[in-house]
Length: 206
Image (cartoon, rainbow, N blue to C red):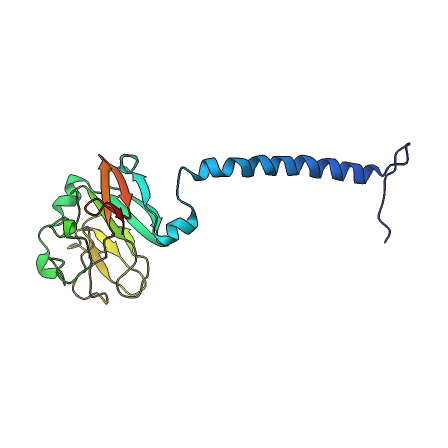
């Protein structure tokens, strides 16, 4: 079928003129956007840099107490939980139900080898992949919930195969996972400013 062409009094194809005008304006807009990218990109690492291990920052003060934020580092989800005093208290009283209560066999920096598995008791930082087959555990922070049972102290549940972890990422007996959730290198260069991928002990990306 022949294309409909609108020609003006001066013999110029008006449809083509309109197309060229629109294309020119669009090209200019795209060019302006790309010009702004380097400036914006300077605020944060690129996706390629993140995949290579570039540090990722998070303002923990923007995470409500009792809630969790997720950032990406080395293509892995990083769970950042701002624990309430009640959640910290829930870490006690179930050591006999844990596979590795002291995290002796699990993967974490030296500064996380404590009862909180953290630099700060109120901030938990975990690599959010199950140590069984790499699934993503879900937050189940409410203690004694109907779903998780009357003896549940709060923590994480992996729906794929049923592994359970407490609010320090320690795995419970009976779970397919054998190790606690891993903890990445991280630091706090200022209060509640978290940097994942930088261990202040070594002053560099891990």
